Length: 288
Image (cartoon, rainbow, N blue to C red; front, side):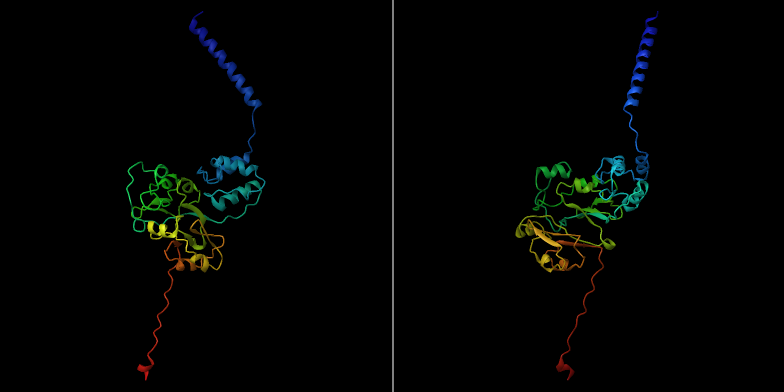
């Protein structure tokens, strides 16, 4: 018999035996997937950003099905609307989540934080931060290479070419947290979006003592505690030479903003304050 024909028959037999073995193995180890996982996955935004804490939307859908309650589970991209749909599929209730948004806690632009040297290397924050403190006197400030921009899947953060600082697009930010993880200086945080998108936070992460911090940046927090003393809601704490505002306690009264001597506290989306009219006292002599 032709050797080529024998080889074909032999290989075909091996293939048939292998297919049979694989079939019985697949049947023995077959796991039925809950059909609700597929239904939940269909309504998720398919961003696979990891903001939920799970490896992609499929992992999150599986976690939702297995969970007894949905209170600790949340899709930041889909938001409350998507979570309500998930709850409807599972016949469960979901706790309403407060909208969050990313904020950049550095206000050291080119005018406030002068350069002391020039970095000539790979334009990457992680690499740059591992080599040295930065090209200014503040080793806590933004490096401006845009790791946060590269990490964002929603085009919600960009480097301002004039200030060289990242700026968040409120309309696009989904609070997935990718930019937070990407920043080696830990300058980006997720905070409450606030009523009418109004927020107050300390735009500084410099933990040096006041004199040193102010020398490095004009708008650095100097831990003078004036903001803490004037706050009627005890929302401000001072730790490691740095003030922080607890947005769970803050009532957006803005007293701390007016009190801060270095303008380190940032206020966003507030209406302009009305200036008090100047009262000029009349000279009693001129009246006579």
